[in-house]
Length: 200
Image 1: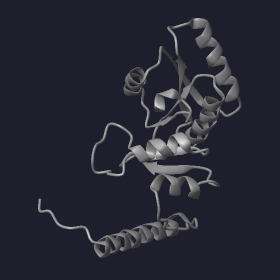
Image 2: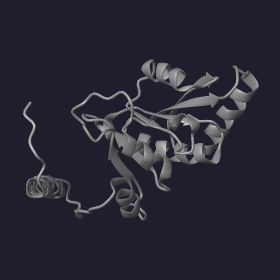
Image 3: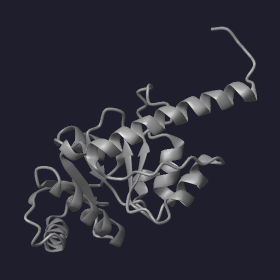
């Protein structure tokens, strides 16, 4: 590589080019879907601008990483900050993910946040095969009684939706155990409450 100075004019030109390409893509999507789409370009600190723009949003979508060409294993800092600070559902997408054709899983630990996550997951699952995998997360070791209580709460919460529910108990849940469970579960989309400690 060759080092070269960064000039404001070249950055402005690059941003204009990106904006033009994005506008063309958005317009093409609007025509194809028949749904009006508005594009707004904001400047400022990325996380703050995203959160401010999405105050009234039903759902926020954000890339896994600001560098989608890099196969990063960890979620990018912006995506992580938005997921933690947002008061709205956030969908973090990896490049190439097809959301509506992916099996859906949800982490449920009985908290109010996980109940909201469950309802969001149910809505996503209804657009796919109507199959939803519920990962019953327990902080301690395996307890059949606690697992049965969580399962009953989850079933009651989703009653009448006609979903094909699959349950899996994850005792002593950690990020590693969650990762192993997801590797063994056909899941394309994972729904998790923003206040879940695993996000940190």
